[in-house]
Length: 237
Image 1 (cartoon, helix red, strand yellow):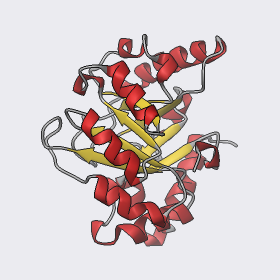
Image 2 (cartoon, rainbow, N blue to C red; image 1 turned 30 degrees about the vertical axis):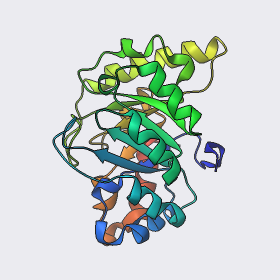
Image 3 (cartoon, one colour; image 1 turned 60 degrees about the horizontal axis):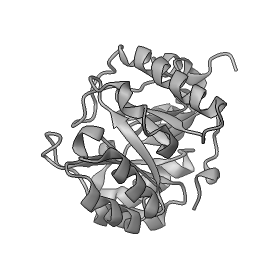
């Protein structure tokens, strides 16, 4: 599987299974793929780096046969390096981590790539964008947290928009100088009422958890909410 298989180049939607029904994860990931999801966002929390405990490589391995779209693994763990080979073997396509959780950020990025995955950094609301400056050539994705990590269902932090514009400028300058493409993802509180300003600020990939998995069947369920998110992201098109 390659990231070239992603089907919506203008806006990628990555539903977070943190908000899915864990009793039927296979059915849930099949449903979001059928509804037009571009990625499966897979939140890994260790009750150490963040105050919650979620899922590990065995769950990633279990859902891998159920979808053909990429699995986007977000490691909210410390330390990071020991889990990278396990998630790569389990079927992850993209692995992102927090720079504060790695003793050697450059080495961890290289480790992810050596195991055949795309690599990215995750910046918390109070984490400086300067972390990106010396590793731009190794990044396939930058993920900006628009909430403090650890729990689903939080409200979007408005200051993320200025940070998005700053990172978008860095990415555009990098690619204009001949650098590789870098995706800019946002995670936390993404809804139909704010995705337009998020995309306008520079995001090309949006994680949505409760907004997708909490969608009422009366409103079209997963198909309905993902279509609504795409329309809201590009009003007037």
